[in-house]
Image (tube, rainbow, N blue to C red; front, side, top):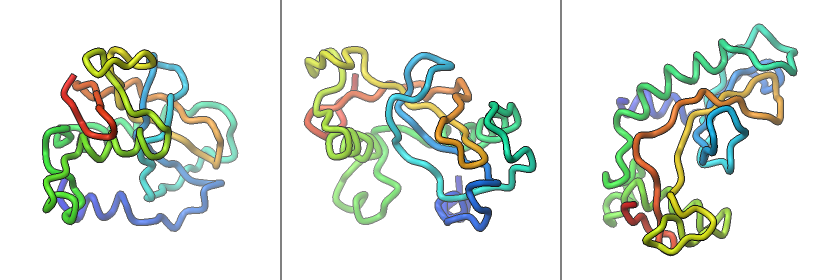
Length: 158
């Protein structure tokens, strides 16, 4: 993604949540299951003519899947953070992710070699879709090719 495209995804949308489609990255479990925890929900919103609806809408997951295809190509945990200030300090994308796990969810250890009992196989990141202001997120079924492992808030390859 270009910086401009990233800026668009992170800029708050004008569409009210009750009639909007949203996409987000979550720590993912089994395909089709609800997400484990939120990593990042894009601020951008898109019109969802299907609203109001409490039922899953395949267009939403298809739409978010197209964003995933673009976002996931550059998502390598060893790369420097997309936040320029953090990158200047040597902080990597994986460190950003592990920091969320530690600070927001009190999960210091992820992965077998990190002695994690809760997530011995590391964690997967997946794309989810949401519409019409619903609480539940729909799984696109797409996952990053790498699992995340962490040691006290710092990325540690699985």
